[in-house]
Image (cartoon, rainbow, N blue to C red; front, side, top):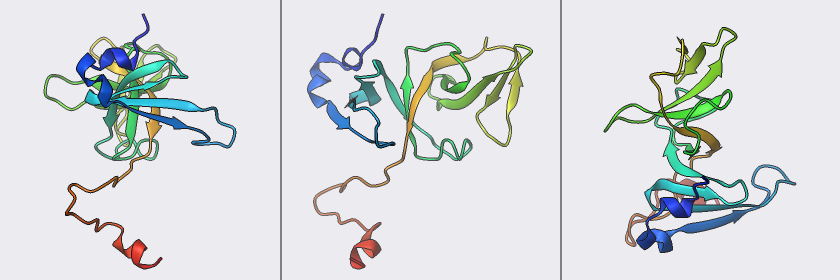
Length: 163
């Protein structure tokens, strides 16, 4: 059964969605993509038929592939190993999620890397609770607007002064 972002967003919140159409986001001949972001960190990419939740990297332990503040679009329909890639795992109620790269080894075991300086060898995936597979990593946008109408930005004042 295909899960779409509209299904993840409560009926009363569906009018709070943001739809963004992009072209040439990474490369000149890249196809158009329509991103729909909703409450509760839900997302959908219409053309890819992918939906799920957004999570943010809290540190640089997976840098340079995933750096602190980057947004990850996690396909929550994938709840098991689906090839060598990045996945997000539940670690228990009230605990932060864990982002890790899973690589299947020749002997059937796995390399679990949630910190590039300390990859772990695990015999199987039995004790892992998959939130989903990372579909796309997006760059971190540090400042998008004002906290309130009386606040002025301070982060980019130097750049503005040089214009």
